[in-house]
Image 1 (tube, rainbow, N blue to C red):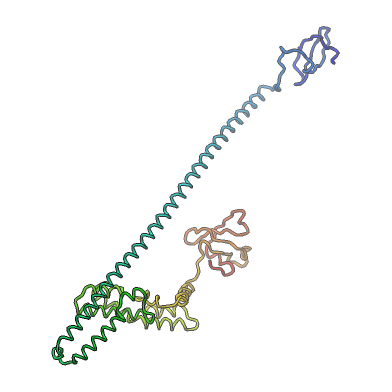
Image 2: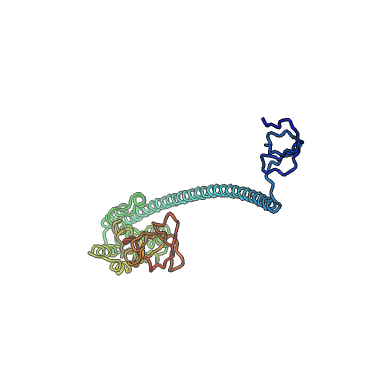
Length: 360
């Protein structure tokens, strides 16, 4: 307990610190008393340190700056949250649009396939009708031959020989021009030649009978326009097919065959490329594709794995990837050893080489 407990005094001077006061008592004694030992509710003790005016202004300015900074950060946070929500919404909308586009594409492909199937069925129906008409016409011709005397045919053959010949023709047509069976399964031996001969037979039959449906059937088989000239031109093209396949296979079988060797022969048959290509095996077509790729030097482009071309440069054995093309001559390279840093360096293409011979 303080020895001056209960005595009254007056605070006549500024406090030396925040925790004590200088008190002058009635007998003139001045003591340093703790704030906690004073009973003076009417005296406001300072709770904050007092500063000179210039410090007070600086502190106020700092407080205002701090307040403004907090408000700015709050505003940026609010904007950031709004942007994030907008981006998320846009991403969801984009995903929905992409999903709808994929669905539309699938439906479109399905519709195309269904239409193709309908066209095929319609074509088969027409071919079956045409086949029935051809067989009916053969029967009519056979019946007419049986009813007329051989002299009406210029005495070129007897009635029995004519009947036998027409019967053989009928059997041959039944075996080779049965369009329904060909629609199910094409001939196994030399199908292109069989189709060509059948197309020409239909074309000749159409000319003899002036039958437009037979002409259309011949055009479908040969893959041409339904006109006599177009069918004849197409048949002439297909007559080159066996020789084309033979020549191309011969050059492919040569040791060390190059693209130039193949092309010297293939360009003679370029007009029927689709036809002879269908006759080649998968191994043969893959060999031709590989020869064409090998004939063109690789080009450094996006995705190429590269290294520096100068053997005296430090990056000669380093591995990098081309990530962007800058015009015709320059590219950006991201080196593996700087991948974590995200560094990309600009080079001319002639400063680089494929890394360890890779061409990707």
